Length: 211
Picture 1: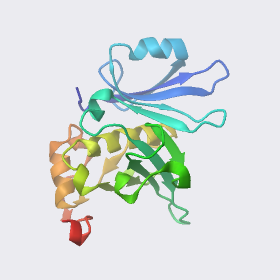
Picture 2: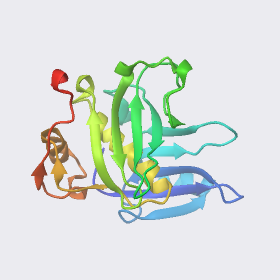
Picture 3: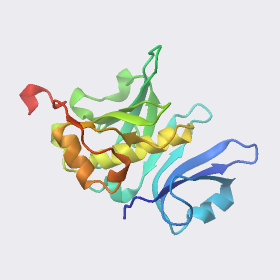
C-alpha cells in the first residue's frame, strides 16, 4: 500500500477555511506537491488514491482529529495524540505523542498536556516524534518497547508529516544521526530516501532497565 510518492490535498470550505487536509499516496500529483480544492472537488481528487492520513482541524471548540489509513492501524489498534510545542527562544520544536487506552476518542489531537480525566496511564504512552517546523527535520522517533515491530513508527511519521505540512512546514526528513533501532527503521521504510545516510550512531533512547 505504501510508497515513496506522497502529495497533499487541502479541502476548502466556501469561506476559504480548511475542512480537511490529507497526505495521499499515488501518482495523481507530483511528489511533495500540495493542491487546494473545494471540498467536493477534493473528495473526487483523492477518490481511488490511498489516503495515508487525513487531518480534520479543530472547529467549534472540538479538538483536531487525525485519521490514519485503516491498514496502518491493523497491528497497533486505535491511538490518540497530544501535540506539545516547546517554548524555546532559538528554534522551537514540536512533539506529537501517541497514546492508547484511556477515555479519549481515537484520532483526537489534544494540545499541551493530557487531561486528568483522560484515564491514561504512563504505560499508555505508545510513542512520540519530535521535529523542527522551520526546517522539517525530525529529531527523534521513539516507540515504547512493548509497541515495537507493530508499524507504530510508520504511523507516527505519517501523522506527524500530515500535521507539519498542514501548518505550512516543509515535508519531514531525517539527518544522518540515528540509534541502531532508528537505522533499522530507516532501512525498512518506504520513505528511506527522505533520510540521510547514517553518519553517526547515537545511544539508544530506551531506558536502560527496559532494554
